[in-house]
Length: 313
Image (tube, rainbow, N blue to C red; front, side, top):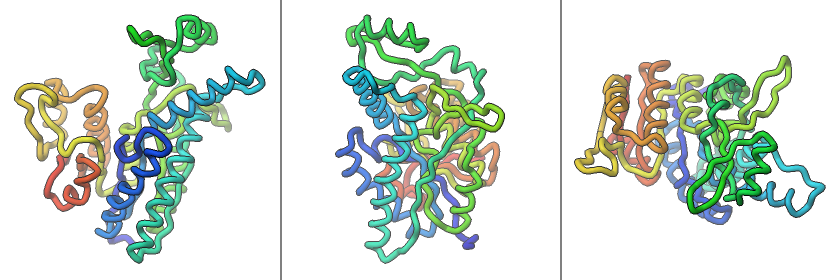
């Protein structure tokens, strides 16, 4: 067991994966180089990733299959999530393994199919807001409502399903993840936020929901007592007034300052806010930790302190 290495959780955004199977195959080649740089810099990596476009694509495909072939049953959201974890993990682990071997580094890279428990009474189930899947006609939308599903109308475009995004409670496979990280292996886990499940006595029942991947990144980092959480996104730094007049980069901030910025409305609810909230959740559990937020291209510079936004307790 190599204890001198820094344990780091790396959270990959959409840019690291692309939006289609072919885009993903190309994107992970570049992603693997950035991740291999971190391995060479002597970091022990646990990787989590987004899956929005991937799980949406799978959900659409399974729904259309059911429309054409009536004997097929539509795949529940939890199954679509499991499928996306499998194929995204497959591409990342193979690309990273090949990149490491090309640099003379022989290190196992494994994907763990990860389940995450959620509370069946989480308020998110009563007001689903996460939009997924294809655009539907009014007729198709009415059928979804009759099945007990939620739909939302996007004016001029049609109707889409909306599902809950409950808060994560426990990572079911955390002991397996810890065992592999302690053995200095590269682990890909909690992809897409993890497969949301509800505990029913000894059984785990898949929930019709998704978990925000930023939220699970903070939880995974705190459960592993990681030294750092690195969130790779589409921007090089976090900004105050992002996309507005007087936009200003933030090179560093404390948890207290981050909370002030949230209260002042500096971070977008659908993009940067969940990342800052994940950073706060992690640092409140691991006060000695460090959070770095930057782009995939700048990951290597960020860990050397040259760029990115650093958040500390």
